[in-house]
Image 1: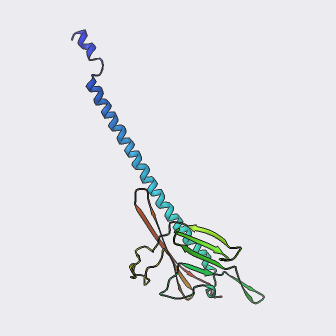
Image 2: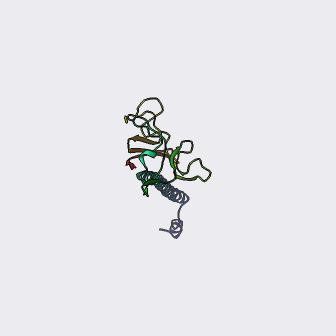
Image 3: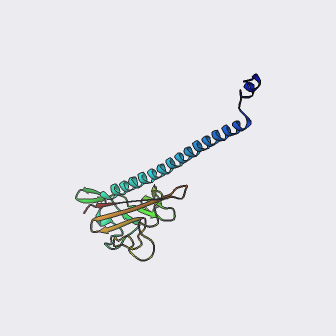
Length: 200
C-alpha cells in the first residue's frame, strides 16, 4: 500500500462522519425520550399518591371529629335513604354537676365549586374558624352521574363526592376524589367509613 493511500484512510470520510453523527443523534434522542417518559411516569405516580394520601387523611379527620359527636346534635338528622353533603354536630364533652356539656357547634361540608372539604367551628358566627381539609373532591361519588338514577347501586341517587348517610347513631361517610394529570389521565379514588356517634 502506498503512503498516499495510507494517509487517505487515516481519518473518517465525509460519509462516515455523517453516519456517525446520525447514530449519535439517534442514541441521544432515545435517551432524552426515555428520560422524559420516566419523568412523566414519576409525576403521574406522585400525583396519584398525593390524592390517595389526601383522601385517607381527610376521611381520618372526619371520623375523629364525628366519633365524639352527640347523636342528638346531628343536623340534619334524617335517616336513609337521604344523604347530605354537609353535617353539623357538637362534641359531647361529658357531665358536669349532672349536666351534659357540649362543645362549640362544628360543621363539615363540601364546597362543590372548589371541590373542597371544609371544617368549621362556630359556623356562620362572627368568630367562626374555618379550615380546608382537602381538595380534588369529585362532583359525584364514583360510579354516579346526575341522571336521577342510582348508578352505583348503593340505594342513593345522584350523591355528591362527599356524602353523609345518617341512620340512628350511625353515620356512613363516602368520599371520592379525582385528579386529572397533565396528560389528561383521570385518577379516581373512593373510600368509606362508618362512625358510631355518642348517644348522650
